[in-house]
Image 1 (cartoon, rainbow, N blue to C red):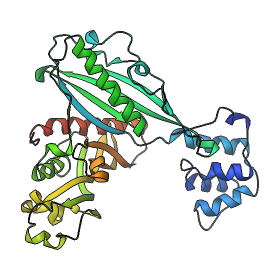
Image 2 (image 1 turned 180 degrees about the horizontal axis):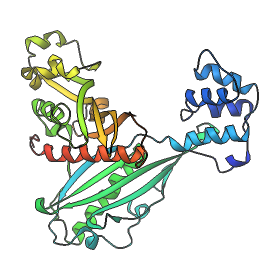
Image 3 (image 1 turned 120 degrees about the vertical axis):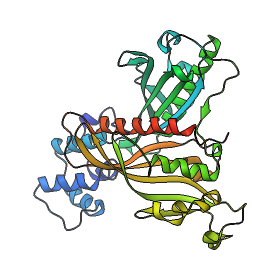
Image 4 (image 1 turned 120 degrees about the horizontal axis):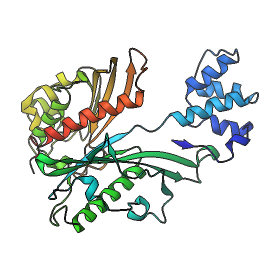
Length: 373
């Protein structure tokens, strides 16, 4: 999320400075349309390319400027979740085993980076549970090549530690909103695991287990995605349809008849539409072992505390999509969400967190049935 300049409360931008401010992505065309309507100005086209010149003919009032700044403050990057596990050999609860005076900035080496850790809350028990700890933090990134109104960006991250006593393991759950928060969280969890090893809570030879693309066979990977979408059993989510797929054929094998047309022609295939779970890539099991499926967008209905709506959830291996890196970790995020009735007793962000936590828990449970390594 863009962070406002320190002196923004003392200025009203105008001219080219105003244009640069209005063109920032955190200000949407609907914001400008609403602001013009409040002025009694109605445009045939609501695109920013039409609204901005009209606004630049005058100046912003302090009230209008505050309205646009609030748009900046309330739009944050979409949170994404990653879960890792490691064997826990100690009888101590996590809270008692936690090293004293944990400081993220001291645990990671980012001295010469263009970002820094801010708003570090420290680990605190969730609902008083000493085996479920949570640390919230922020990362502030400075980019002097950007427009004056976006040289500083603020992103939130969360690190959760959960001890699963009956499995003898702890879960390391990272929620990140940018590459920087992901990097900080991964470095911090790695250092924390090393400290637990130093204190005898984790055996020296234990490695952090990650859900990566190369830990599935082609067929098992597709079955895993289907269990989290088409076949999901949840107290909150109900599957409706798959709306996006990203896949590629396994050219190291002789493709079946259904897929022969892809031989030496198709490297990556992106499908967008409706009911894609009924296409032969997904619906015909004999094609599964010849298909690299690495991204699924599924639409679900949801009911959380009496609040109903629909959402599209993305499950994907992002690095595999970009670089075909088999070590890419599985990430889950809510791509979009809409509500039938406006939440009152619970916030939209709380609903998102409940839905992500529910799917994240199912992902971890089902993973053990499908991993091949």
